[in-house]
Image (cartoon, rainbow, N blue to C red; front, side, top):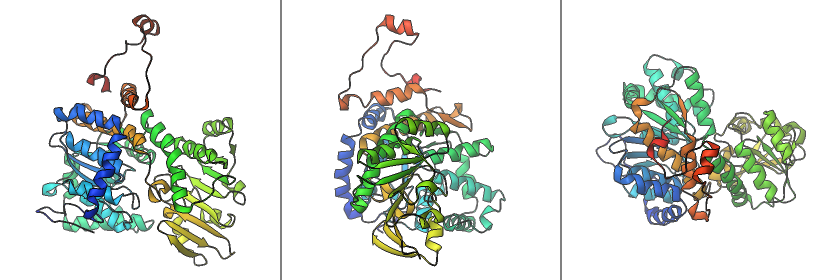
Amino acid sequence: MNAVAKPHAVPDYKVHDIALAAVGRKRIRMAEEEMPGLMQIRAKYAPLQPLKGVRLSGSLHMTKETAVLIETLSALGATVRWASCNIFSTQDDAAAAIAASGVPVFAWKGESLEEYWDCTLNMLTHEGMTGPQLIVDDGGDATLLIHKGLDMENGDTWVDQPGANHEEQVVKDLLKRTRSERPGFWTNVAKDWRGVSEETTTGVHRLYQMMEAGKLLVPAINVNDSVTKSKFDNLYGCRESLADGIKRATDLMIAGKVALVCGYGDVGKGCAHSLKSFGARVIVTEIDPINALQAAMEGYEVKTTEDVLHEADIFVTTTGNRDVITFEHMQGMKNNALVCNIGHFDNEIQMDRLNAAKDVSKENIKPQVDRYTFASGRSIYILAEGRLVNLGCAHGHPAFVMSNSFSNQTLAQIDLWTNKDNYEKTVYRLPKQLDEEVARLHLEQIGVKLTVLTAEQSAYLGIPVQGPYKPEHYRY
């Protein structure tokens, strides 16, 4: 990895190859052309500098689209440090371009778990061994590390117990290292931290768990459940990027195959639509009766995983939960079945058990494509080691989709800071007016013209006359 050291506790950046910066800059420019919402927000708020001097850390996939978000936050005045939230999702040219621009970034495709968590620590460490005042999080890893670090410094012994798995042990080892090398670091970080905006379903679940336990340290904004995030990123994004990942990894003919989509939330809906559009016969699993009914109404069979092990050719997990596909499931799959995950974490598929099994052999076909052969002689293919297939094997969601998500993130960060004294330590949802404004910012680019109600029609419905955006509309 390339790095340049300055008088700082950590290097200014750590990327695969800084020479990729010129290519990355061209790709970032292309992304900007497909991100009208974020670019309009940048133009509107940059003169106002609402984040001037704010120390901001981001843990979110280091892609060209994220580069546009980073440079928007920087244009609004923030001092930004960044790391990816996934070991396989970084686009190395985009990371190099951001590093070359002077923003400290710690990310490259193919990090080890030890490297990943070191990058997360570097991203959280600002000048003078201070921490961030605001965080953009994706999956909750940055939020988790601060909470666990503070617990440790307050006497909690969690870090001194054996980890439940390899990654948990890596986190514990990292925290124990900070305990000896940086005494009191996490207490100081928590003292200055003022808020977090969270991108994903799984990260939001973590926040609600901490809130309900009375342990949430700062106000949090649930960006994930904004309609212009969940429908665009989770549904429309997955509708395009799932097939993209499978195709780039395998060149598999999807038409005529039987595909099992585990979960029919927004991510599952997008995946089911994607596979169906390519000609697959799609079956869905669900735990939620409403989602199950929706799936049935849209023409999908709803069964259990066990029902279709010997039938399905493609298995996709979408839930954000753990152990959705077990080792026993994989043992019972038909020969050469394809297994992948598009939920946030790697434990939806029991990869630890699969890799530890003594009677299972592993053959790497190419990066992020592995063939596992069982004692029975049957084989399965696993993509991206059970992590996000659309980012591990492809480039993630299209830029236009991410413009919606990141417009919400930017406005959430502005409000967390400018109204920081009005928030309590709980989880907030973004208001409907903001959702509507984010959608409005994207209409012109795709040729949409809204019908405008007359004053009489507005009065009849009891709603305000439509007008331009006003900042007070964004308050909670």
